Length: 73
Image (cartoon, rainbow, N blue to C red; front, side):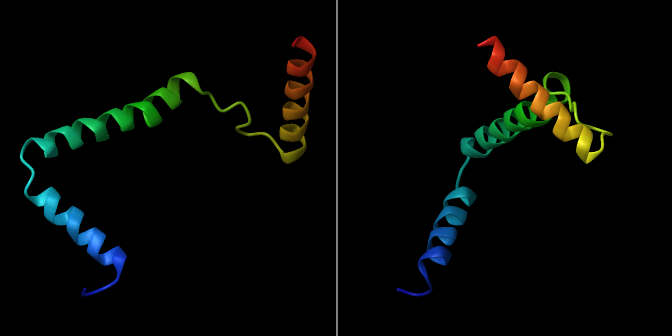
């Protein structure tokens, strides 16, 4: 048993990935989907409301939002 467990696991996955044929295409599709989910959707559906505000303004905005949401429930 050469090396530690981390290097053996790493080598196992690297060797398996090198011998893939269709798996590389599937991994590419997965990476593209992750990019769309975390980058594109964040730009359009999760605006940064706190951009350009001071610390006090950020604290005030967050506290007002928490209070308003608690009162509407």
